[in-house]
Image 1 (tube, rainbow, N blue to C red):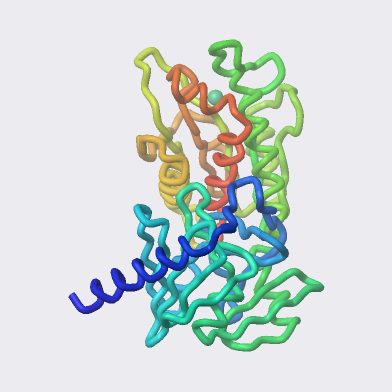
Image 2 (tube, rainbow, N blue to C red):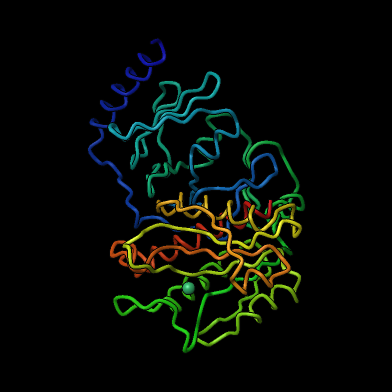
Length: 347
Ligand SMILES: [Zn+2]
């Protein structure tokens, strides 16, 4: 009761302050820059963020909850008021989406940039919030790494920022050349698969991962040379990308694997890999989670000596899913989702 009353008081206080300001800076999704190669460490260790860091007015913003929960802070988001409260020990920060005015323990301050809401994630200015919560901030400009919490050297930061460096992933865009895969609404599966794969390649290389592609353009590739590539480079995993089709208007994501349990890399089997990727992709894309399916008759999976999966991102025969798959934004999101799964599996 006491806490709720406090929040309400603060809400009212902040709302009235906000109304006093005639010039209110609203940030929208076009005002920010995505920081693809900036890494954020917490106490010298990399943390997995649900989305990339962004910058507004030269200030770095990060997902509030994921980052500050690491320090025991509680982040409450009230969409009806556009209000974000961050509470840690005796510190109480109240801020509004799109506004630079902020209250720290009821003292009104001005930030250099406002918090923003991106695809449902509350992004807050990292340095401002860290300072307010008495968390140390280090910025290593040379290597583009920020560290919150315990102090580390640049060498440590550099090592921690690329924990996947040297890992080997083979990406296999399904079909190619005369083998189109499913064709629906004038869209060929081989093209969707390749586009998602090329986006994924870029994302993985950003992490310092060594990426091999079974094809980088529209050409026919033999099934055995797909798994053969993964075997010959002794990859940590083989991830084949496909899209589905059926006669029943099914929608959703599924991941296929060959039920070989002896084969392990990084402590995981193909089945484990399938489960991790399936969960990440369906939740990140918001698709129906059809689940993981054991398949013994697929050459790519059966002949792979390293953990291997086929991700069936969506159904081209479902009107809604095909519409989404035909946008670059959704294919980028699909690549990010698969990347998240791969990184989780490599940990
Ligand atoms: Zn296919």
